[in-house]
Image 1: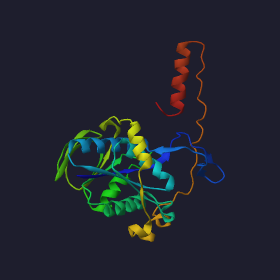
Image 2: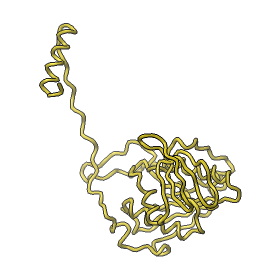
Image 3: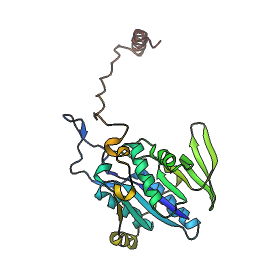
Length: 262
C-alpha cells in the first residue's frame, strides 16, 4: 500500500503580530515547524504502515523552500520519501488552488492508495483542503476521522466524529481522509531517524513539472485575502452597585430589563 501524507510548514508561534498599516501578518523572524494537526496524520500513516506489510509513505507538501524542514520532520519519524511542490506562481494560493496543486503532486507520485491530511492548519484553519483534494482527484473523501477501524487493498472502514455522534463509513480505495487529534498520540523521532532525515534528498517539483494551469493557482485563486486585523478590544463590563445582595439583585434585574434580556 502506498500512503501519501500531506503536510504544511506553519508558524510555530501562537500569537503572530499584525501590521496595522498594511493589514498583513508580520512574518519576519518567525520560527516555523510542522503544522501540529499534521503530526496526527503522519502518525496514523506510520501506524497503517505497521499494520499493512509492504506499505510505503510519501510526504507531500506545497510551500517555499523552507518547507523542506516540515518534510524532514516527518521523515525523521519513519516516512520513506519527501516531495516539495515549490514555485513562485503558487504563492497566495487559496484552499481550492492549494488542493489542486497537491492533487497534481499525488498524481505524479507512484499510484497512491490512501491520502492522509490533518483536519486543518493552525494558520488558515479552513479545514477544507482534504475535502477539496478529494474532489480534484475525484476520490471519495472523509473528514474528522477519529479511527481507521479496518483497511485492506480495496477499502477502508473509518469512524468520523459528527455533531450527533460517530459515523462508521466504508470508503473504496483510493481515498482521502482528514484526521482529528483523537485518532492517536504522535511519537517522537529517534536520533537515528533525525540523522537519516537530515541526509534525505527531497524531490522538488515546479508548476511546469506538474503541468499546473496558471489560471488555477496563486493569483488565479478564486478568493483573495484583502486585510487581516486583530479582534477588537472587549469593552469594559458593567458593575452592578448596591449596598446589600438584595439591592444588587434588584439593580441587576433592572439592567437586564433595560437591555431587554428579560
